[in-house]
Amino acid sequence: MTEAPRALDPVGRTRRRLLALTLPLAAVLYVGAEATNPKGTDQIVDTTKVAFKVLPIAEHHTGQLYLSGILSCVALGALAVAFVALATMIRGRGAAVATVAAIVGVIGFFSGALVNVLVGFNLAAVAAAHLSRDAGAAFLVTTFKSGVASVLLDLYAFAEIYFAPTLMAIALWRSRCVPRWLVALFFIGLEIAEQVPSAGPARVLLEMAPFFVAMMLLALRMWGVSFWSSRSGTP
Figure 1 (cartoon, rainbow, N blue to C red):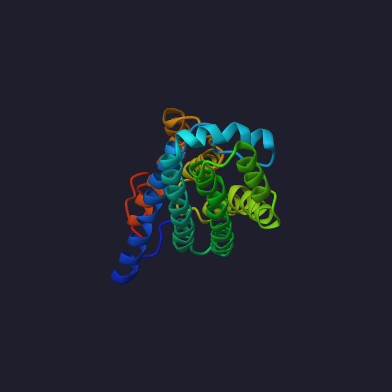
Figure 2 (cartoon, helix red, strand yellow; figure 1 turned 90 degrees about the vertical axis):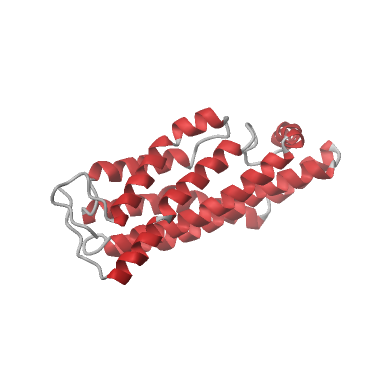
């Protein structure tokens, strides 16, 4: 059984519902970003061999790369807000952990957005510039091996992919503000979504479906819909 959340005043309820909208928005943007990413380009270009592999693909899908890059940055920004929104839903047990998860999530998603500038925009720009294969590869490898890029990649991997989702799942589990099966769906779905390769729209939509469903259900819970437990109250 889930705990019935305390009633909010009209202003608080409106604020929470506005925040709830960021969850499905983030899910839609994230799925869209991965679905539009040209197949085979979502790679860390740290060797000349990888650069030679992705550059021909980028030359044929430059516009698509720019679109995917824009969607990725906006999606990660929306996910950062979504983590903050989830933290506001958790009170009592798990509230402190949820706050830490939101802070770590914001750092991780911001780092992820900057990493996606390297993966998407830089690759598209090099392809559009029609540099020689060697010059384009050297630029990409140098960029990805820079100190700043290494720090951002480490923050992205640690904060966004592992630490923040784990902490938020723990907070949701402890708070019992949503069913525990939904907590599991959220955690597993997000972990899968963050590691889905650019393998075409069909595979992306299939593999990201659990994350999409979890975000929709969490948004409904924040909105005040309690369809899974007769003892759940309206937030």
